[in-house]
Image: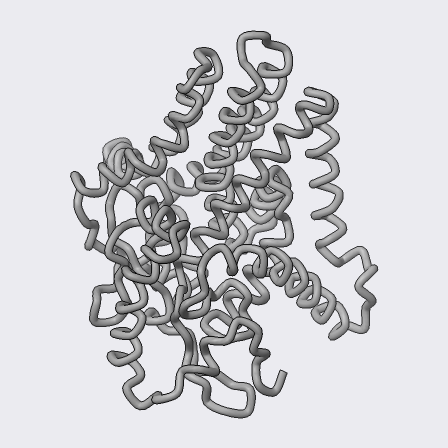
Length: 378
């Protein structure tokens, strides 16, 4: 009976292990070379977009009170990715810098694909891990972020984004009519600054300076320097450049998703520097089944912000009565975000409909639209 239950639970996790198929795929493209090196980004963007059309929507919800003891296979999934990504990233660095069959453009294309993997999967898994209470899981999340030189994402996400989402104080909330190409350079700088400021303020409340060893930025910097040093030792200067390419692509992938998740959505300002509590209606929701397998339910983002501590298999689907819905999954929407006229044509009418539905009493949205508008009272 126990063995049967264990098998059933393991089988239920199988679709979420689909991300691990990208590992043999990227190694195969490294061996073959040529245009095949573009297969990984094409598979995550186009193949999963097609699979979404074939598999449809996932509208079922697990019991949100399921204990961790019943989620062992799901938890193992996120933990197992860390050594897999580490060995793949540095194994590829060694392979391409010690092989002669790949041209420079092919190497760049390969590590572009590696960046798609470490951004689409790696940063997403680190996001799941950083939200857990255990030091081990949070530490594993730090390792994943160090591999893409974006360690401060943990501080910014936990201390700034979740607290201020949907307000002008949150850099990651894309403003209405703000194209991705304006959003991206803004968010790169503002997220770093806001993360450091949040950690400094946290220490100041304990009468400690920012230089105190408790500041996680010291850990971030040490881990990132270690990753860069290892890349240089394995592949020399070319290995270092390829490492930086994959890190840059991974960061771009993350911020594309951030852009999509909250575009144009705002929390109502209550006065005196206060905003309403975060609700499911403050994040875009997507229920496409295949891309949620790949992204471990990240597209159930409305519930994640509503209940940030829920593990990914317990995230709830919210229908159009409680949360705004994206027309397609992230693979399609992130591509659309790279084409601002197309993005505005698709999403601006939906933002306006959202405003009429949830906030018919708000007649002046201009203060919410400004990309550089500090929170009142801050």
